[in-house]
Amino acid sequence: MMTMLQARRKAIYVGLVALLLIFLLLDYVPGLSAYAAWVTPPVALFLGLAFALVCGQAHPRFNKKMSKYLLQYSVVGLGFGMNLHASLASGREGMEFTILSVFGTLLIGWVIGRKLLKVGRDTSYLISSGTAICGGSAIAAVGPVLRAKDSDMSVALGTIFVLNAIALFIFPVVGHALGMSQQDFGTWAAIAIHDTSSVVGAGAAYGEEALRVATTIKLTRALWIIPVAILTSFIFKSKGQRVSIPWFIFFFILAMVFNTYVLGTSATGIAIGNGINDLARKMLTVTLFFIGASLSRDVLRTVGLRPLVQGVLLWVVISLGTLGYIYWR
Image 1 (tube, rainbow, N blue to C red):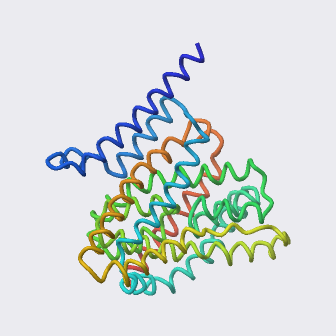
Image 2 (tube, rainbow, N blue to C red):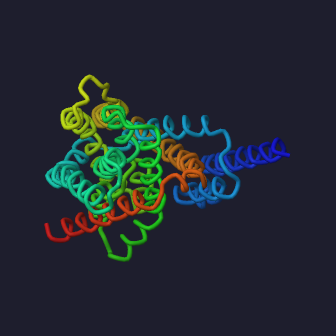
């Protein structure tokens, strides 16, 4: 009986992935591109979430690897659609607040988690780190330095993941309701949304300029993984632990440089860059399905109430704080 259920679950999983790929590829077929319009990042995430919550997880190892590596390849591919000078200008504008918000979020997270809610030290710090920098990537980097238990890592990752899924849906809606510009929304999303995947997805849903700004600021922010991990080793006296460096960020920068100074100098080069960028967006859409399919009912049960409350409160504080910075700067 269990074997039949597992077989059906896997068949549905493969069918959904195939459905997404087929409709995304229709965009390249003349006259059929309109049929691919419904396959957006939020729709792909919703399909993944619906599958995981109704059917459970299928191919969890494959799912985890695909979501990790496809996201990295997608981010690098997005670099081929960006101009280095324009991106540096966008990143420089939010740099001061990025620095302030990273360390401010860590401090506020400690107050909310440890003092107010009495969440465990490691779990609280991991949630704060994920909120402050770049979600799961920051937790994966800081966890070994902190020597956190697998259970603490799971709770922190689950908390951040739930909030990421929510953010991808509500941020574009709130942005339009507030009449935010592309620049302002990109800045807000990059700082207030945890994971790079949801930041890029929300930016793509809002517009071209929002995507460029959000991606640049978020990846600039992600570089803070390194100093925060080193600082963590001193604060918690865990020297000698390896720091996981997100190398794909540097390849993203190289892609921007190559696009600006090589591809951007000719019409053919620009067309190639745009083609790679378009393919990267399609890869990102599929990535969000894999990410959504990772959120099972077991993950939700593992999170617990107090860590989730800490994550929500911290998320609300940084979201409102970023909005205040945007409107009163």
